[in-house]
Length: 191
Image 1 (cartoon, rainbow, N blue to C red):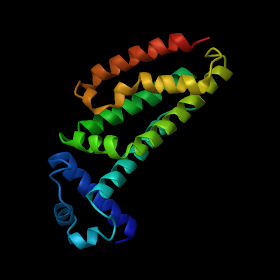
Image 2: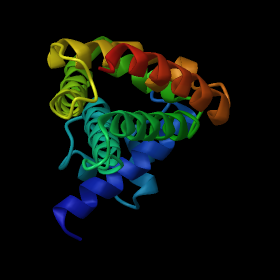
Image 3: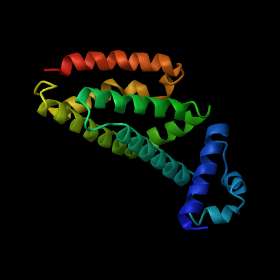
């Protein structure tokens, strides 16, 4: 098996363990057992359990960003792009957060000790939203405004749609709230 495949196998096994049993209760030995390899072999790929968690979160954030970007039809009107992106973001976040009852431990670890991962994702999100805002301004769909500030404000206003503690509500209810917020944002953005 190639090195990338082994790393992927380890990350998948760890993700299942973290989701089902919690980060704190998961051991390297259990992850190794799930991968049918020795604990020592895990250390060839990752320094420790926290390194596995960091790598796993980085992979998930990249996956989330790609899914949201790919869901956006860049030839559509800007407000439609905003809807597409935010809906994909909500659906990914909801599915991920409903995937295990112990994910809050992992989120807490990243928030407390590795916030740079979240910052990197947020900067990518804001850059994508900024492109949508710029396109909306250029087409006359949105009034003239600072695209960076507007993108940052939209990211902040929609934050609840990707925070785990808000993901306990059923998806249709979350979608209805998102659509209401996006309608309000559209009224503020339009020319």
